[in-house]
Image 1 (spheres, rainbow, N blue to C red):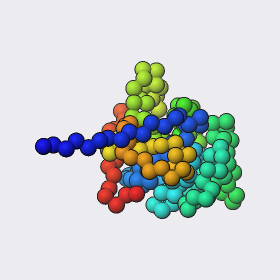
Image 2 (spheres, rainbow, N blue to C red; image 1 turned 120 degrees about the vertical axis):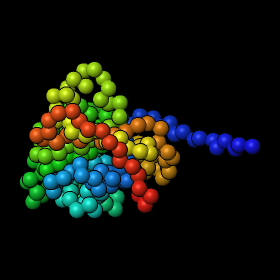
Image 3 (spheres, rainbow, N blue to C red; image 1 turned 30 degrees about the vertical axis):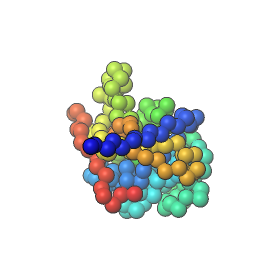
Image 4 (tube, rainbow, N blue to C red; image 1 turned 45 degrees about the vertical axis):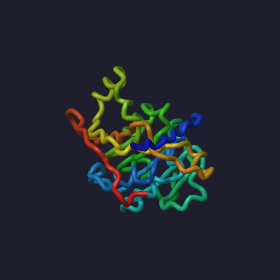
Amino acid sequence: MTVLKERVSHLWARHPDDWYCEDYWVSERLFASSALAGCRSVLDPACGFGRIVHSADVAGFTAAGSDIAPRWRDQPHRGVYCVADFIAGAWPAVKHRPSWSKPDAIVSNPPFKHAEAFARLALERATKVVALLLPTTWRHGDERSRWLETTPLAEVLDITPRPSMPPGPVILAGEKPGGGTKDFSWFVWRHGYEGRHLGGWLRKCAEAR
């Protein structure tokens, strides 16, 4: 007799700021790839807890983060942080780091409702690479697809298995999210890139958190 395991799905209320928290391995795998080749400084202007900043620092990049609120406080993460509203045009003013106004790379899990505006601003500020974690279907709309064709979108890396990305308060409450049910990808733009974007996968490794 086959025993069917019950699948428990988590349904969370949408966070007003679209603050959703990715697993560590999602950014760790990106920084272990060649997506950021030639980059040294990495900025996450929607850093939340600071997981992407931490992963970048561990991977050997000079890393900084900012957000509209100091959500990284009390988190054991590496890197430097400050409060700044990226979408409103405020840029991180990290002490002794004036270069953060023009980092090599901007890597972020941005608020989905501002994703296109976020991408446009990031492309203006990053000197080499922009990598944004977004729903895989984000590129499927007709108008957006036409805009994307005008940008230096170089790669779309599908993340497997599906990552769980609960709202930040769920993590703070100590809830342990299960497997994800939504598809996400890293959208990677590279200044100077021409032609159609490439496709690929980033797979979770056994030792990932």
